[in-house]
Image (cartoon, rainbow, N blue to C red; front, side, top):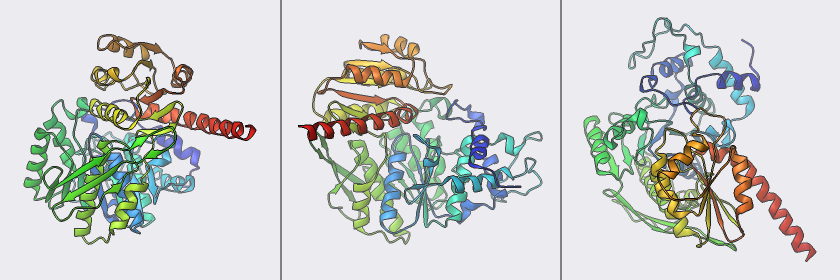
Length: 476
């Protein structure tokens, strides 16, 4: 077939079922389509050296740390993450550069060329594939399955030295779980996606532990005892050597401090069974990021054991240079403007702890939107005591976004916090920005989709404010 254009590629991609926009049912999660698609594409995942990262929170940040460290060590490094903030190409990067429009179009052409009726094609003997007799592969593929296939193809064709893959949802039935990784990483386990993964930490841990492969090592940052027991049992059953936070490695954390005039970055010191690492600067705020850094360092030690050459200087540079937007990202001062993606109770707690530890006291205003399948009341119980007013809104467009009126009903039953209803995220931003004084702090959180919608607007206004301040200084 003739190559498709970039616009045609996006139309095909966005025409698929997208479980980031509507929640999947447990029966929707399976690997048969993914394995068959990759088989038809030549099994590109089999040609990759993979670090596979799962977790309830922290998996994106840890993946970014690992990719930056490996890049600093001189390895051509692929990074696959989800969801994206502003541009879909952000999901598939090599050495920090997103996939280009031309590369995306070329790879999508190959995916679109896959025949819909693919049952005559024999799947891998290791992984039998069963499609229902009336199922058309190309029609039934999901948005995330196509994203995963694009990532595998891009990394294989560009011959990356190592690919860091972030799990999308869960682990056991996630589309990325068709690889045989050099090391499997589980950053943390807390309550999230309970409709799909279960409402007990043990059942959630079982889904995350699905990425652990027989005989391949694993690194875990899981703290909760119920979840730890599941990770330990899975590794014993599969003969997978395990390194655990709190047992095989620890960390200490020195908070960073953000002021109007300057920033003092946080620092982390990691101690493992083999050594104590020197204190290292961290370019991400919060003790939860120090825990992620410890998991990253333990993973690097495991990769060194597997034969990869990763100097100490690369580890230090990677932690100091890592960028992961919308994770307690400071986008303005006077007032402070903080953009975050906290979307469950644990990440909301990490957010308020970091605001307390790293920012000066003052009045704090909140812009909040969230998905309907989250523990909204639990998040409000954590956030409400830290803020004087909340602007309730929704992100666009998504069937999962909770309506502002629904959020108000939950808030009234949970906490005594004044609120303003805003029909759009942009309206909420302008209302909050008008209400904020120069000594205040304005925080945007609740969903990566809200952060992605508002980040370009916040950046544009901050650039305009900086230009105005420079002009005023010249006039003075």
